[in-house]
Image 1 (tube, rainbow, N blue to C red):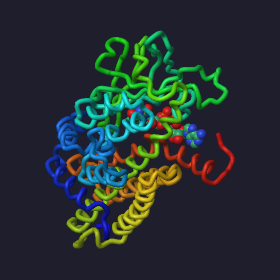
Image 2: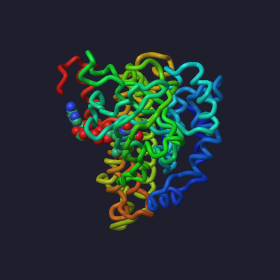
Image 3: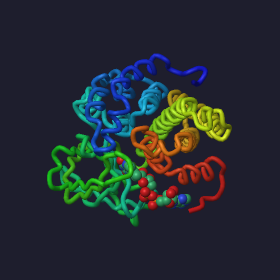
Amino acid sequence: MPSKEQCPEIRAEIRKFCSKYGDEYWRKLDKEHTYPEQFVQELTEAGWLAALIPDQYGGSGLSMKEASVILEEINRSGGNSAACHAQMYIMGSLLRHGSEEQKRRYLPKIAKGEVRLQAFGVTEPDAGSDTTHIRTFAKKDGDFYVVNGGKIFTSRVQHSDMLLLLARTTPYEQCEKKTMGMSIFLVDLRTAGDSLEVRPIDTMVNHETNQLFFRDLKVPKENLIGEEGRGFYYILDGMNAERILVASESIGDARWFIARSVRYGKERVIFGRAIAQNQGIQFPIAQAYAQTEAADLMRFRAAEMFDAGEPCGPEANMAKLLCAQASWAAGNAALDTHGGYGFAAEYDVERKFRECRLFSIAPVSNNMVLNYVAEHVLGMPRSY
Ligand SMILES: Cc1cc2nc3c(=O)[nH]c(=O)nc-3n(C[C@H](O)[C@H](O)[C@H](O)COP(=O)(O)OP(=O)(O)OC[C@H]3O[C@@H](n4cnc5c(N)ncnc54)[C@H](O)[C@@H]3O)c2cc1C
């Protein structure tokens, strides 16, 4: 549909790959609330989830632009890459801030799929969007840090070997700057035993997410990434990649909705004519298409700046916002176009409608993106 598509070779490969995992595959998983294990395993073995790991550590060494196209195409095929997208970007903290020894130990295994690092524990029940108020604490004790506290909405823990954890290492009250005193750790979920309780959360989408409780969990001190106390900045560093990739998934969703709407609108004959002949049907689809194309430009601009090593916070944030809004507009158009059938699971519109909505809230809510743009881009006073 878009006149000139970027990275056509990668698109063609991913389309071929995804053609083996059709609507029925994703629909069944959604109904049964189960994890797309086979899809993720095969995607990993094919090397696609190691896109952003440099060649020297066994990855594919692709650009952010190319990586973003991989996730876009998965969602555009009707799939849901949120099941595994984090395997692509969580390792970024390790890559940027880990020691050479840590990188050599973990990255080649992550690239091969021998180790899954796709769980990321930041959000806490009492802190929410206000990350500096997290309470999970890692106390240094000899060769270990002892972790106590809890996280919420920690996704993919049951399908991950390791977790990237953000914890306070200095109490909030003792920090001169509230963004200091937090650290990031690699937690080996395979050896956590009873020190970690995982309580699954039933959600509106098929997204394996959990509440976690840490009780005297011992993490070896060599699993600290970077400098103690600077973890918040390391997490911030990784957010641009996360925002750009999630934005691309929204673009994939939007394009799926638009394609399905156009097809159904032309096929469905009511009052003796195709419903797509009515402007009431055409306009919302055309509007969503225009929104999607515009949002996509911001996504590629952010990705290209990221690849050039330029600061791209505003662009990555705006891409995430605009792409999430475009997919939501396209989802609504698709639901209206399909009428009652949009609610029937076998048309997949209702599933994608639920799935695309997540990106207005997670990994960061659109409100927080607007706060960022208002304060840091436009220089208006902080509102909170
Ligand atoms: C399915 C799912 C998977 C997730 N996976 C992960 C994960 O793997 N790891 C992880 O760490 N987290 C994860 N999250 C958590 C997600 O990042 C948070 O839900 C999100 O950041 C918002 O935090 P909150 O839910 O506590 O909302 P709150 O912070 O309580 O906010 C609630 C609402 O108030 C608004 N609000 C709050 N403060 C302001 C303000 N100052 N100005 C304007 N509006 C404001 C917010 O925008 C939001 O709309 C996941 C969430 C979901 C639903």
